[in-house]
Image (cartoon, rainbow, N blue to C red):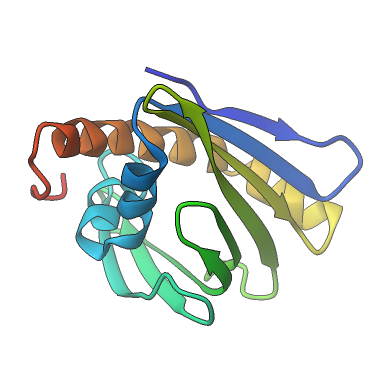
Length: 167
């Protein structure tokens, strides 16, 4: 299993990440685009996810809520500014707990050959303080757990199973 690599760029309001997957770009992209698949992997282990809407297309938007085991709710939303299937996504990302902080994120789907791919992301925050708040509040752990769950979804996808219950 691959591990998430996160770089919190010193003295700049950026966070960069990458994660390899033992799956082709088309399968990983589909897991980002198909609402049923997104719901299976998005978020930390042990949390449930409610997706209000998820329109992965240029000009589309999304809104979802993670619910922790104690019932606390964490709401997120944003706009997909540019979507190039199997290649590239530019989106905004906003956590409801900090409504004045909107990051701009770029995600690239890179074919590594041999049925493997790398997801490469770059997030830009409006301030160093906003970036530090995100980096210091569990973002990396939540992303890593979500991508580990995505590995499981992709394994089932490879086995011909495309739907299962969330958590």
